[in-house]
Image (cartoon, rainbow, N blue to C red; front, side, top):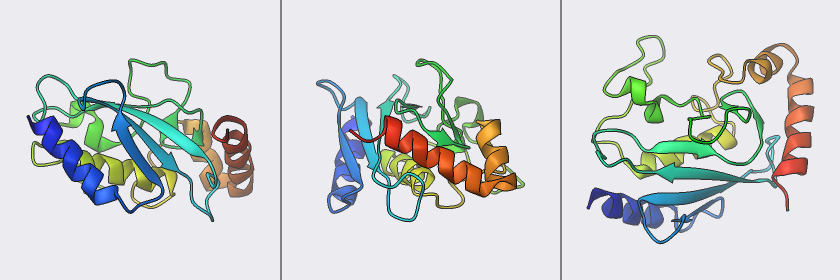
Length: 169
């Protein structure tokens, strides 16, 4: 089963990374809980951000469902979108971009050669504010994206406030 192979690969890849915790959501590796810790130097420092990753029946031909459960002020994650829909702006997990490449950015959608490790790396990049994954030029949360570009101090203050309020327990 490809899900089991990808899960084992991701566990091995991130076993020494203190910012990543990957575990089954329930009893099966086709439904996962990913927790990413914010790092120093980012507005998400000290926060723990929980993502749900669920493999579809037609995996690896279609991408896993991804959802951020932790409220976060982020240009590429929109906490106002309810569960059941994707609230993460990431070409890699966008079901409408399977097999496609964005000519302007070079970002590519899901292909069967991509793995869970690719998804974890991309989500980690979003939380750790690493381009191209942290991409305020292509926001899902337009207000946060606009703030990053026009008022970065206000963005950082609000992102830190939300991190303290919703991601620290």
